[in-house]
Image 1: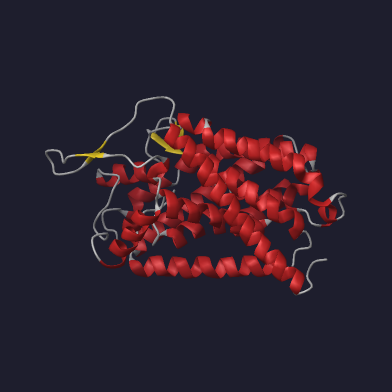
Image 2: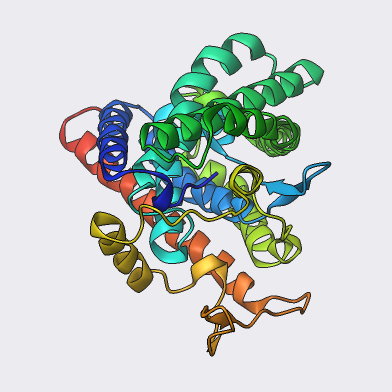
Length: 356
């Protein structure tokens, strides 16, 4: 549910940026005091890359004609703890907006709050952890993951509705939009719960001390990062497979947000607020920075059609080399950004005497 800039007003967009920046500052301050930054830094990078790749795979939501993808916040929180998870997911969303035009730049702050902050600082500590308890496997844990993912998606969707309503987007009638948006997370939650259980199950068998952002047991584990190399390279291989190959079979149906907009307004795009001012300026910036918009090579545009719109050529091949390059390059950039954030925080933590 990556919002485009046209869905929000400049005031709401700036407020979203301020809110996201405040949460990021809080996350960074808390993470610096963590005793296990040495192992967290590489895991932040590779797990951020994995979530980037996983979000490329939209799957069809039965009975709606729409599609959805994983959020990843719950998975990251279970493995990294909420603070590192928030910063890693913020890296994912920033890379998506800047280089792949997935979500607007003005809307980036709101997207970070809806997708990252809600999952890491509301759903994970207040819903998942109390219900899951200490049981790291079994039916109870999967059901808890599904429930948490459903609630997370519903809260994120409600955030989108509130932000568009506050922005004065009159085309999106509040009641109708809510009724269409909120049920979408039900299907996404089931899939996200299964994926989260699978990944955490794999890591839990190899290095159980990594689960639930554990600090004490991980800090005392022998070998430092060397003890996590198997998990690290396993996730790296999975990232390459998901982003480079499995992304070919992503659903072409509109995502839940676009589908709901289409049902309410008759179109998946709203252009009312995006013609001037800050919207236009940030749109030009994004156009210059996004070297692979929509996770593909930039398409050559045909001359305008009868309605005056330029038409992009679409590929019908099953093999999508552009998607493969986007998945691998995007995951690589995300890993560098998330890892760099962790590295900087670790250096500052060492200089301030928080870690050994």
